Length: 185
Image (cartoon, rainbow, N blue to C red; front, side, top):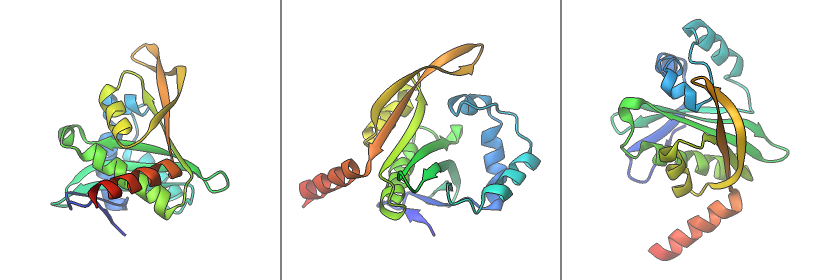
């Protein structure tokens, strides 16, 4: 299974064992993990064990983003999937050397589409550092709206930082899709 964007410049495919070296590099980059509110020191063995424990977990979907040449660009996760309340959390990392090329927006749109059209989620949310203006801009462009500001939500670089919780609802996503189609057609 592979999710492809309209221009065939980016796709999401399920995370496979052979992708774990790439994920390990991302997970051990302190700058990246600061934005995921996690400690960046994970061994490859720990990551492999985590993969084995979660590979069949129906409350999670993990993808790698690949470009047109099938090069790994980033990691996309839908986690905390709740099938009663029909909500889930969205997370994304674009490799530092691949940032600034529009991949984050493309991957976010594909993940939203998957969450709403395949998983039938009602609400998708994310947590983002209030100082991460570039990410916030991408999320807003993709339809996420500010839901709340979480005061002193995470600790990094010796201080507590605030975060936004942003969300998008399935109904709003479909309304945006319809409006875009009406404009084009």
